[in-house]
Image 1 (cartoon, rainbow, N blue to C red):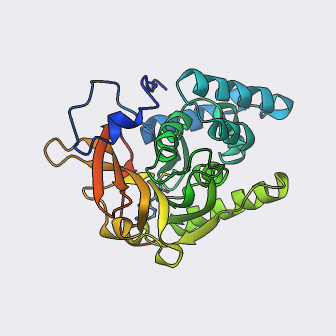
Image 2 (image 1 turned 90 degrees about the vertical axis):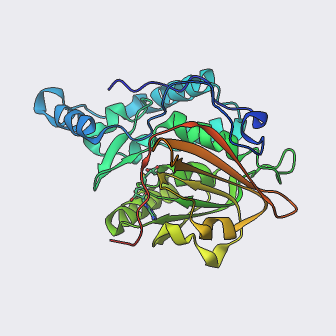
Length: 283
Ligand code: SAH
């Protein structure tokens, strides 16, 4: 798979919090979800008897550590975030036929036409979130009360939970919600001390009012507008990060919206991305 890796993350706060979406430096498109056709080809190739991997087995820690080193080399800096990538076993979240690719910086199919996000893209988004305006210096859980839209297989939610006081994660596809539940059950048993995630089956476009307001909100799917519920449920000092379609070009842009301590909203753009569509309703 020939996905390009982002070159310029993390973006410093002054690049995203200027208050006005300004012209972005030209850089490569982030592709958190691989073209599904390609992913399906990979899946078939890996599932064929000639190349069936034996699994990561005893090597998995070393392979995982190399992924963390690559993320660090790519500009991911936050120590708790790097620690989270080193702690959460990504190969537990992918199909057994794909475990050999689990620590590559690529998205992989997780069923129902959806994909697990690229580690570098998750890393870049979380780096931006931990710099939210209301965060206290040296807060050990800088994501605070965090809402994750689009649980998928639950990998990103599991990472977020290492940096948040609470994570609520919403998924609109019942089968994926149940799959994430299984994955996180395994994590709870296998990683004592890992802080659990609250999984919700529902339409994430409505946010999740019962646990609002949120200090951070992160969306793994993008639409033409930021749902009003997300803005309403964002706490003062909070930050939202989501792919958003540019109406002029149709290009998805990673969008950062802050609710300043005085309640005002401030929006900035952090460059082009390509996420799966945000869809309403549940299935
Ligand atoms: N964070 C996930 C990536 C999942 S891909 C992971 O780590 O695996 C994006 C997910 O967003 C898909 O599962 C899709 O079903 C979900 N999604 C799209 N629109 C949604 C909505 N309105 N509410 C909740 N989930 C949604």
